[in-house]
Amino acid sequence: MKTPYLAWQDHEDRRLLPVGRLSFDGHVYRFVYTKGAEQSPRFVPFGVMRDLHVVYESTVLFPLFANRLLSKSRPEYRDFLAWLDVPEHAAEPLVLLALTEGMRATDTLMVFPYPEKSSDGKPHVRFFSHGLRYVLPAIVQFIAEHLRPSAPLFLMLDPPKSARFVRGGAAHRGPSTARWVLPTLPPSGCASSAADSTSDPTRGGRARESRRASATALVM
Image (cartoon, rainbow, N blue to C red; front, side, top):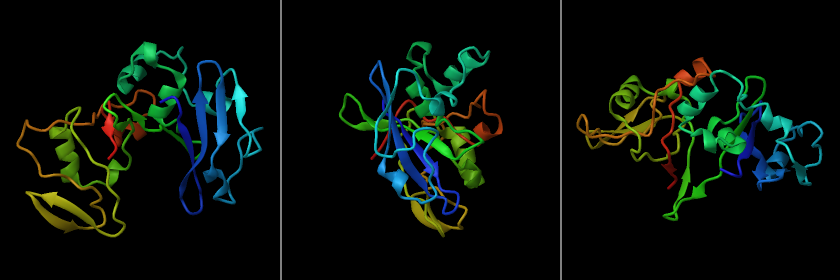
């Protein structure tokens, strides 16, 4: 997670565009705009970083990102790291930004990690799930009762008008609110999960609809 990307949501067409990339080499932070910054006429560069075609460098983390991190002096900081499943010695700014997404109520920016290859040569990435309030109650109940850390989950496109889900090995069509594809339900006690319902000690309501991703999520 040494190179997180920054996404911006267009307020008109609701597109999430990757507009920048942040990196750190151990000494210098660097920020560059990506091609996504040129895809919307409504995008406005950040602060004094007006030129979309230069590399910005700093020996300290840019305020745009530093303001999205929880201060180490906050009393809930250790609980925050435990919720993220990040040991204190590994709590580097870019790691925390990538995991928490750096989201704030005052803008439409979101930080996301670039998939990294593990020792087995496969790309892995950790992320939070979104929109659980739209999932069918039966699926939410299944998540709460059966899923455990390290269960394999698969990324799928969200059908715009109808959803396909699997029940008992057979495919079914559901209403537009059924947005997730679920594998055949295993017997009780046989499933393991990539989610945890522990609430974020710093975010309140938003965390209650989110689930913590497991240590790694395989990107197929």
